[in-house]
Amino acid sequence: MKEIKVFDKSLNEGFKIKLIKSIHNFDAIKGGNGKRNIIKTTTFDGVNINIKAFKIPNIFNQVAYQFFRKSKAQRSFEYANKLIELEVGTPKPLAYFEYKAPFLFKKSFYVSEHLDCDLTYRALTTNFDYPDYDVVLRAFTRFTFNLHEKGIHFLDHSPGNTLIKKNGNAYDFYLVDLNRMTFGTLDFETRIKNFSRLTTHKSMVGIMSDEYAKYSGEDYQKIFDLMWKETQAFQYKFYRKKRLKKKLRFWKP
Image (cartoon, rainbow, N blue to C red):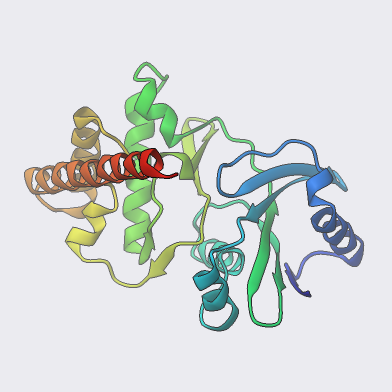
């Protein structure tokens, strides 16, 4: 099986060798979380790193990733570097690895520095008494507005994919799970629809709409109506998909 490995230019040879060994012995690393993809954390040379092992794709995508599309690992690495270029927070990308058979794509890994955070956006959807709740949610909205201004369309803008770290009296935001994003000018509807996966709570949509209106110059009611409509539409599709999967599992022999 062919091994392809690409490293951040700042890494020395000793660090690269240790990274390679960690990938080769991935199953032996303790811990790990994730249903489809598995993330494990390990440490060497005083650096905590995350290794994300992507699930081997289905046969159709094995062909697609082999010949036509960049792998999730490669996209994660390249998009992380692009975000850093645009001065958007994300854990430092270190490397990606791919394993290919003669005609099919198999395993891939993305490696980044581990980032200790104080919370993720998800905490805001469950703990309305979180200190500085309104401040954090409005800062997150400004962060998203700045993504849009920089032409970044983060397609997986969902509750677990933004890490939040307190920095004095302010908050810094870092994107993770990066393999799905596009770059270019975003129209109004695309910008507001980008909030649709984040919450089921109308009160949060109200706060985010208010803050986005202040910075975009668009009408609050126009933003709120569209954001709430897209939020409800996403929830309907999400739960319809869950119900369908449940039925399929029930009928599966």
